[in-house]
Length: 466
Image (tube, rainbow, N blue to C red):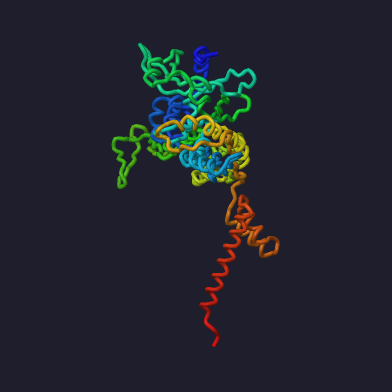
C-alpha cells in the first residue's frame, strides 16, 4: 500500500495522540526549567483571587524532577565500550569517526534522560554541511505508528512534527512522514504539501531505504507508552506544598493587635511611643485593654507530610530514597536534598541497560548499512571509506552499582590487607571492578615502581650514622 493511502489513518492517529503530545510538552518545559508557570496555574485554580495575588510572590518553584531524572540517567556517565563484530581496522577507524562526530556519549546521555522522562525517545542521525550529527528528538515532537499485523510494536511509520504553517485560511501543523520506502510532507488535515516538496526537490521516495530514526521505547506492551501522570502531578505538588507553607508563614510573621474600649485615634506605632489608657467615665464597667493574636502554623508537620509523599513517590518509581529522619523547618532544605542525593537508583539503571544495548545496535546498523552509503555520495562528506557489509557493533555497559562512599571502601580494603585477608591485587580489583587483568597488572607495576622510587629517595636523603 502506498503511503498516501495511509494518510487518513495517520491523521486520525495524530489527533488521537494530541493529549500525549501536550503532556510530553509540559513535561519537557518543566524539565527545561519552566516549572513556575505550571505551579502558578495550579495555585490560581485552587485559591481565591485575593489569596492568589498574595501567594504568587512567595512561590517556591523547587524542581526536583531534574535531580531525579539525573540520578536515573547515569548509563553514559562512565562511557560504555563498543566492540565491532566482523569488522577490520578500517571499520574501527570508521566507528571512531562516527563516535567523535556524533559526540556519541554526550548525545546518548541525553537520550537516557529523555527515556526516563518520557518513557521513550528517538535518535536522529543527520548530515550537516557534510558532517554527521546525532540529534535526540524530545517526545513532544514525534509520533510512531504501526500497521504490522504480526508485531504491533514494530515501527512502520514515523511522524516528525515540524511546527505550524499558514495554509489558505487556517494554520496547520507540518508533519514529515517516513516509511522505509517513502517520505511525504503533509499537514495535520492529511493534505500533501506538494509545493514545499517541489521546492525541496523531494520526489516522495526515502533514499535511505529505511526510516532514518531509532525509536527507543520502555514499554513492552504498547507502541506509545502510557504516560506517567504521577510525574507531573508530584513535580508540581511539592512546590505547591512549600508555597502553602510560605503563605502561612507570611501571616504567622505578623501579629494582630486588638483593643477594647480604646480611642485608637491617639495610638501611634513607634518604638518610643507611650500609650496611656483611661476608662470611659460614661461607662463605669469599661476597662481599656490591648491584646495580641499571634497566628501559628505547625510547619514541622507539613514538612513531614511533604517528606512522606516524596518518599512514597520515589518508592513507587523503584527508587530507594535516602533515610534522613524527621524534617523540621530548620532542616527542610538539607533534608529534601538528602532524600534525592542519597537515593539508590542502581536497580532501575541496571534494567535500562538492555534497552540501550539494543538501541545502539540498531543505531549503528542504521548508520553503517543505510545512511553511510547515501552520505558517501555527498560531495561535502569527507569520510570516503566503505564499511564491511553487515557490520555490527555491540555496546557493553559497566554494571550499575549502588552509590558507595569511596573513602570507606578504600579504608575497608586497607584493613583487609593489614589483616592478611586480601592481597593488593584483590583490593585493587574490588576498588576497580571494571578493570581488565592487563589494566590491573599495569597498575600494580606502576605502584611497585613508584614505591621503589620513594624508597631510593628516602635512602639517598638519609644522613649516615657517625
